[in-house]
Image (cartoon, rainbow, N blue to C red):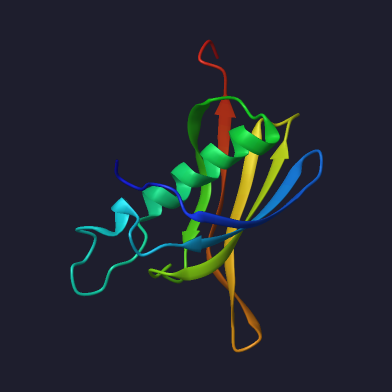
Length: 122
């Protein structure tokens, strides 16, 4: 079976927020074919993980309704240790996400954005 998710190292959770720390293992299937000589984690995978973990930890609705803001600033490379911050705004049905890591004692933002989630009937 192809490996599709990172190794979870830590989790801090409150009612509408979760902070997950991962090791983005080099054997994750999504690295294959996404630039043979310079593998990086595809943006679509980062969005997929944000929705997956939001559903798991924040009980968000299942259906993707669109992106409002998204920025891919720094690539996520194989074996990187990253944090994924997820914040759910129930009243607006919006999920904010941010992938970050540390480089030379400074925070590096890899990607961030907001997406609308809802029920299939909406």
